[in-house]
Image (cartoon, rainbow over all chains, first blue to last red; front, side, top):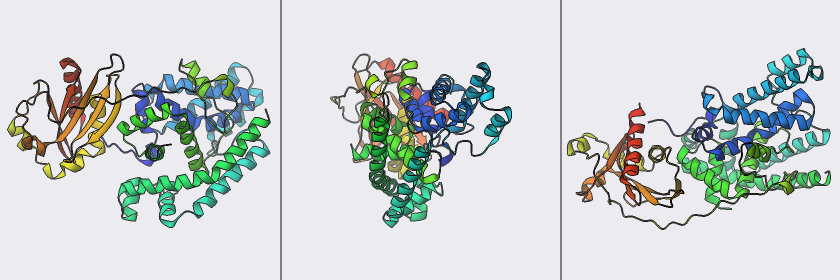
Length: 206
Length: 234
């Protein structure tokens, strides 16, 4: 029988397969997961948030409509990002707006390994906020109880599956799952004030 | 928020849920906007830990995309307030469980398993593990493939049996799919047993049965799906 638990590399696969079965709810979670990064990616090409959001929207719509052509040979995020790059390039071509980015810029973006790593179009405040968030997350990790911190570290930094972690730590998979969950709960509490504050700022700036 | 469902969402984030479990989680998330927001926050947490891009956090295009696809648009709860006045949050209807049928109640005969076949499947030592395994849940999921039914709940018995209660939204009918360790097959007098399928996995063998308020044709379809999934296995 086919394995039920998918590897780290394929962690979206279960949602992809639900989506292929027509389960829109799975698409919704994939959308929520990747939308920020997809908008950030489109922003690298078009430098306009509204247009970037339009491109991201179109990219997700394309992904949704052609999900059955996704052959699961690559990760879902690679696929959606490739769609976004192509959609961005098509937009620039169709609008004759390549002048917004030179050909060499586009090639550089396409070939760059860090294309997804830097939030495109972010203001200094946003970068500061993101950096602040990262710092708090890392600090909260450091302060976790050791057994929980170890489980999360093996998962996030070493990329081990729950089964592999259970072997390393010599404990049941259910314990691993529980430790990782509890750790995330603790960390959530730490970042909530930042996210809520960020939300207030967003509201007040509109 | 329910801790158990949040723990499952956490596992889903890591790709550590079976498709069957994921379906339950998706149903829960759909019915509870806070869980949807929880999913997003877990993604942020992971990205923050692993140096992945946090992206453009102020953007929430999910409602727009949903609308384009003719879906009821929803929006994130807290830290994305940009368009909240324009959209509303869907609330799924709740289901009530009213249908309980005891194990061993089978309806009609299609695939009778012969004693030879039963004894040929020598995996009784691992049956309990199998019945609780992701493979068992996969069997259930495959069985209901394409039937447009909603899961109401799952349960298990003291002897390792597993059952899932379903509802057909179109007509409100309910039914149960049961998986029983083959070792119980001889213990429980299934003299009238009928319409069965059996599943052999690398962790054990169990019997699948369908009972409840649905047609014999539908029951047969479910069991055919089970057998279909069996033939697909390596």
